[in-house]
Length: 264
Image 1 (cartoon, rainbow, N blue to C red):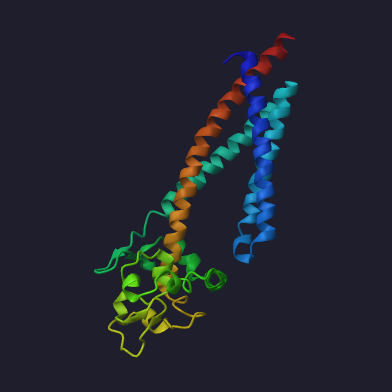
Image 2: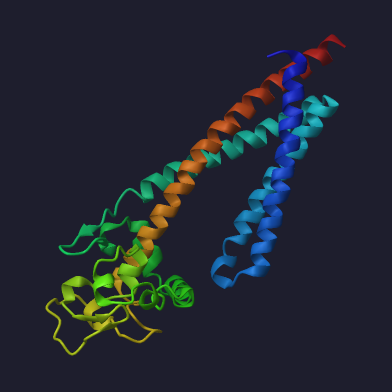
């Protein structure tokens, strides 16, 4: 890459990423003021990511604009650390989310998930009483279970529905309990459960209770997290490739700046 071209590209790439970082920070601030405590936990990582990208982009932009070799060194080292962090995080995500495939049940269009099928990390986090109480409050607030009766007006519609992992695990008792459904939000609990599964005793028709304390609910949340994290991991792979290209261009710009200084 030419001596002037790499510096020009580095300058404008970092200018654009500075603008992107500002947008990310503004989005994080907006989340902190417009969402409840359930989603506020995401705001700090979002704002932190935006701040890190902004600082690195400023250093890279000034280094390329002023042709300052030491700033380009700092830029490259910082970018390398970010690349390694993304790589390690992505590998760990794929390892943690490798288990938990779900179980097909005859007559149901969706799978049921069991907590013990997931990785030890999920078991540790979801069995932590403090973590689960916080998540349970979010689940109750989300109205997912209460909305089932609005989505499926008849029992026939409900039985043929394709429920999400959270709906299947938190809003109804496990199918192995054998409770007959009266509608999408009510089960006849006068029937003796045909399974010794403790979730059968934990389920209640109350909107505030449902199966939120069930292992099946924790498994549904684990599956939801697994799906979301896989999307994040795929995004990280794309981001890693893009940042690697930027890193290569930055290396060229730093080398060219050093050559110009040596000639001067």
